[in-house]
Image (cartoon, rainbow, N blue to C red; front, side, top):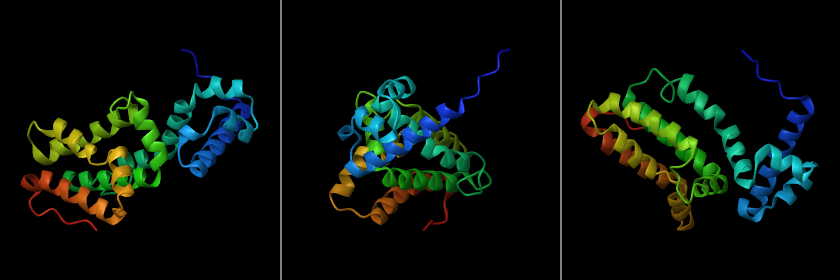
Length: 201
């Protein structure tokens, strides 16, 4: 069985430099669409060919940045302390996962909007969506004990779509009201299953 080759030190440094440069430029200009691959290559001090070979295109760069930033969140859900991680009742974990996802999307609005729009304008055509849907569906099935978990996971994730978040923020809705609204929706979905589920702040 072949062993995967370890990334060369210079290649790893170049990758990190590109991600740092891309993150800074995306944040400064407020929209990844306003940043060219030439801009990123110059800021990172690498050749444009290196950039394209490593990431493919701007969407590939956005995807790499999102993946880098979600690693800790994924680890917290899989192995971290409750209620986000294992050990809490399934209903409480549903609330915690949605709250963490919403917080992440609010903190990374331009990146998440660009990533969700990359799949022909659909947020469903990316690996991250499938991962979070599977996690929520599993928790909902445990909490509700019926056959509705798959659909309800989609419905709850629709409440934290980046285009909806962008619309609400642009309309002046505060982060607190958005968090409260998503939590209220999740509690309504869980009400019959968990009854007196504790309200999370």
